Image 1 (cartoon, rainbow, N blue to C red):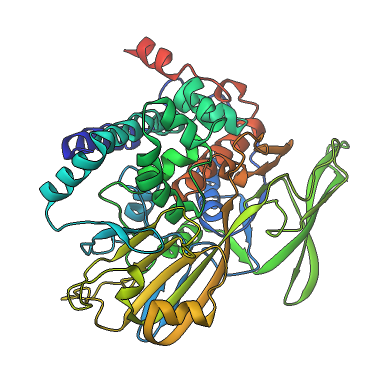
Image 2: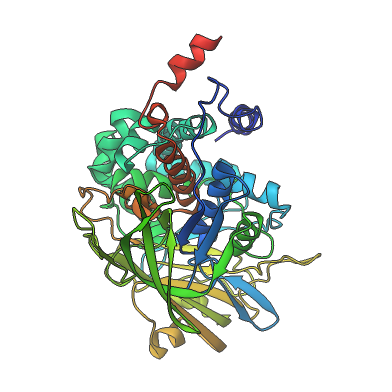
Length: 509
């Protein structure tokens, strides 16, 4: 992606961002606002939902955010020695405009960039090692794969161009009742087609060779999603965008965005586990009955329950992730939707890398590769191996070579045993293991996504993860659900499932 392309895009959409939203028509008269809203989950999706719900419903409504673990969810850090390191979601794309807006609003800086080098490991040896010189890398790729690498960048760019449309729709208050409708608003039938074929099928259909897909594309999907090129084509494109240049992270840890959004939303955090949600009716002052959602939860003080006008579930409703039961709903709402989450184990090791494990003859003092991706081969027990930098980069920091003890992060599908660690490291003094059910298992690709709307005023934010799981996708879903809740509460059907934005914009000019 060229700097000029990025600058034009950024200026266009940031200009839209600050130009005053919903200027297409005067807003209709709204009915009374809800009094209480519950958000279940305080990860990036839940805290962004609280932020956007406050923006939509104003300062009076009470917003409660339930979280049984730590704020941030799958955005987490681990302390090793004197520093903290990212162990969850770690990088953000330069065109992720919601995440960029969040840190601008919260006054949080981006983390200082530390130059890195990449290599690809096939379980026996390094089959590619990036040079410090761009021209050398270019000709290596050209010699081996022709113009496939440039064509891949153009392919991802074409997907990103369509992806960016969602920011215009949301800027003008448009929302979508299902993941499929949201994707169609972005990319039309082409995005739905990507959802229903594998990345491998999509790329081979566009003329990419099997060798290029196996050697270059598969290592990228393995590091980002722990899965092969047989994931769906849409999440595959998101994964390839995650290998783009200009990726960034938040100074002090990406989880700071979650705590900042929670504070900025003026929500009340309830440290408790939600166990069930049911329908309740109560008499109103006018003599009729009013329906509410009763949220039952267990906290340090025991079991309790509260009534809410609107509830947003921002935690995965899948086996192994949550066990919220829904009672009294017709049609019934399942505790678990079909599909499982894929396990990725993040193992942080402070030690000295055994570079001979990678099949290289380079000395450890000359080995400066920091990102080692792996091919999808039987002999490779790991998905990736990377040298980690602290979540805050101190002045004068320089990443040390492999001859020095430092922190490495290993992604694998299973826990690493002592024998595997001893093969990878000459010595180590501390190990921290975090098993994540980090993202859905995207194979096979064809699976109907769960709904955004579980009931009249009950919403499910994490449905979007079955298209693609990423920080920005959660933020987009949070924005969509907040708009959807607002429009359905105030009976503004004209802002739901409409794809006439560009027609209406032309009519205003």
